[in-house]
Image 1 (tube, one colour):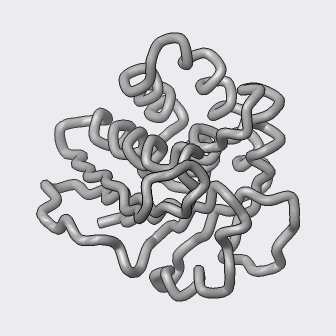
Image 2: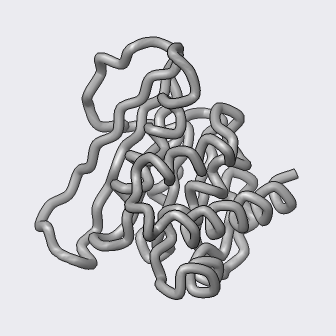
Image 3: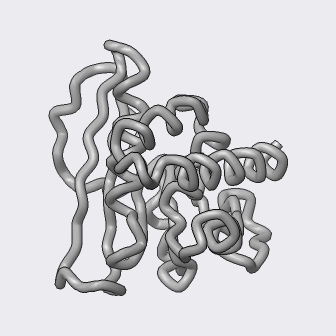
Length: 177
C-alpha cells in the first residue's frame, strides 16, 4: 500500500487534493483501490489540517491515520519542520510548496504558490501539488489526475485546475529527473 500524508491549512484544499488523488488512482482500472479522509481540529480557515490518501491494488480495510507515509505533501511551507522526516517511511519523499531550495534529497521543492497565482489567480495549491505528485509517483499519470479533476470538481473549475496541474507536472518532471 502507498500512503500519502497531506499537510495544509483550512481552505487550501488539502482534503480535496487527497480525495482527487484517490479518485485518480481508483478510476484507472478495476484493480486500483483508494481511501481518502481528513483529520482536523477546529474547523476554521487557516487552521492546520492533515489529510490522508491510501492507494493499493486490493480493497483497503485499514482506516487509521497514517503514521509513516511514502509521500508527505505540504501545501504550506510554514507547516514544514524537521519533524516531517519522522513521518516518512524508509525511502519516502516530501513534496514541499516553497520558494526556498532544500538540500535534502528526500525533499522535492516546487513553487506551487507562483503556479497557482499565475494560472488560478488564487493561492490555492492543491491541484498544483497533485500535478507535481503525478510526475513523482509512478502509480498515476497526469492523465489520471485530469480525469479525476473532471469527475470530482465542478465544471467551472476544470480548465484552470487542469492547466495548473499540467504546469506543475511539467515543472516536476524537469526538476525530478
